[in-house]
Structure formats: structure tokens, C-alpha cells
Length: 343
Image (cartoon, rainbow, N blue to C red):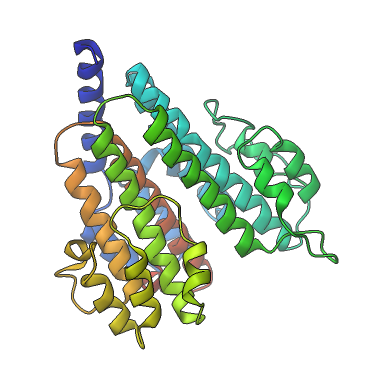
């Protein structure tokens, strides 16, 4: 890698650190927990440096869930495109590949909407338009009026074969949402793993694989915790895990599945190869352990050597923060305290 490209990527990493500094603090999150309405949340975020611009796109009062979600997505997209423009060619290759994740989210949003009985959606002019996407614009995918239309839109995508292979309910003509979402996510991580190991020749390859693999580890931990509660047999559970591993092993999966309580499941995680990320987190529920471990891991990546891993860590934490805010907005809309939804 020549000096010019390395300098570009170091600048990119430093820019990501600066953006990370603008994310919500613990005090900000405590204040959000005390809010009582969606309008109060919008007003609060409008005073933060990380989400100020996103809130300017919303109406003064009574923003809908869709408008709020779209504004956050647009903010993340703006960050992504800004960082992409600064990157070296090899780093752009990796960042461009990550747009397949945006395509995945658009497809699952469409499946969730269709399963709820909603048909075609009117075009959302505020919806993000991802020009870098490998395939269809995510707005077109989200707005698909039927499963058949969604499959057609994805015919050139890595997700096309998965959608075509799904078993459909004879009455609704739709696949089971949970099965579809899991198989689509598995396909993304299978493609990402193959790309990183065989095709990516950019900077910090080993540490980048480790950083991405940690994200897959955390998803696998989340899935295995859910599967334990449904008494899923170990053989079946292992088939449902992401095909990109770091320190999450089949032995850890079996230990969590065999746990008799949430407390025992948490202890099994702390005793695993991922244990150092769960140490010192107290007796929090297992799901909170996962969120806290991920936040701690990526904070260390961001404050470590400036590489492409820094950018990936920032984008991951920013997406997690957006997901948390979306949950808080919906909770407030139902008159509920957002505290329990801000995992």
C-alpha cells in the first residue's frame, strides 16, 4: 500500500474518531430515559451535535415513526458517503461491500411490512438513496408492493437465490419472517467472510477480519440466547448461527443452550473465549451483556491504531445508537418509559 493511500486511510480513521466523539454520552442516555413524549426526544436530539442535522428534516411536532427512522438512516448514510469519499481505493472496496448490509435491512423491512398486511407504500422522498449499493436502491426494496415484486427486484442480488428458495405460506404467499431474516443475514455474513479472506487486499487485513468477526460473534451470542429460551436442540441451533466466527465456538453455544437460567447462561459466556469482554459487567441480563461488550470492544478499536477498523467500529456503533433511538421513539409514542428499550 503506497504512502498516499495510507495517509488517506489514517485521515479517514481520525475523522471517524471525531464523529464518534459526537455520539450520545451516558448522561445523554439517562436524560432520554426521563423524557415523556416523542416530541421531547426530537427536541433533545436537535440539541446534540451527532443528530442535530437529522432532526432538522422532521416536522416541528408529531413526527411519525417512519419519518423519525428515515431521518436517522439519512444521517448515517451521509456519514457513510462522506467517509467513503475520503477513503483510498482499497478501503472504498471494503466500504462499498458493506452496502450489502443496507440492502439486507431494506429487504427485511419490506418483508416485515408485507407480513403486517400492508401493501405498496407511496415513495418516501426523505428516504435514503444509496448510490453505492450493489443492486437496487434500498428505497425501492422497502416499498415493494408484494413478495413477487421483491423477488424480482433482487434477481441480480446475492439475496435473490435465498428469497427464491424460501418456503411460502399457501394462504399469505409470504415466507415466515423469522426464517427469512435469519437466512438473509447468514448469506450476508457468508459473502462478507468470503470477501475478506479471499478478495480483500487492503490495509490491516488480519485486524479487520477480527473486528468484523467480533460483530458476528455478538450476533451469534444474541441468537443462541434466544434459541435457549425456546429449548432449541443444539444441532439445530448450530445450523442457525452466522458463518463467520471469531471466539464464539460450538462449545460455547452448547454451554449456553444447556444453561438452566439466564444467570447460568451469562456465566457460560464469561467463561468462554469472549469472556474478557463480559468481565466486570456485573449481573446484567445476558442481552445487556452483549450490548455492553460490543460497545466496549468497539470503543477500544476506535481509540486504537488509526486503520479501516476504526471506520468500521464507528459505523457499527452509530447504527446501534440509531436502533436504540428508534426503540425509544416508539416506546414514547405508546406512553412507555424508554429506559427498558434502550439496551
